[in-house]
Amino acid sequence: MPSSALPVVVVAAVLVRDGAVLACRRAAHKDAAGLWEFPGGKVEAGETPQEALARELREELGVDVGVGSLLDRTVTGRVDLACYAATLAGSAPTASTDHDALEWRQPRALGGLEWAPADRPVVAVLSGMPLEELAAAAGSTERSEEGTR
Image (cartoon, rainbow, N blue to C red; front, side, top):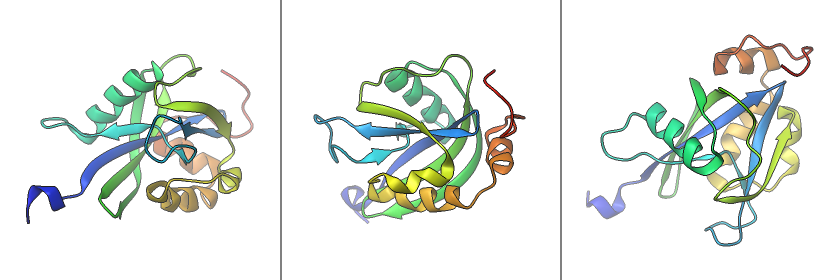
């Protein structure tokens, strides 16, 4: 198969904080402008998916993360997207280089946004996942009833 026909390998983070996950709206200057997605980006040669995800979130959001378990993997068109649960290692992001809006939402409230096609399957997975299970996948011990840390 010619390399131009191979899917682009992309990783995304389902960032978990206080029982909510981070949704990001793509900025006007990006492809798929106005659609929502989980933050992340392309895996570069020589990187593991987890390394790529940590790098992309530092570049886009200015945050360090702990990458947890794989939640979903979907191939849509030319995109091979792996979504990992993740936790913040410090403060929450307040701005993004690729997005014009950042929203923390309960997993069951994610369906109210217009998602990029590759992210839609993981949104469906998250809508039925208990918060404790999502927190465990992210490597966190937080519970839905806990307050801000």
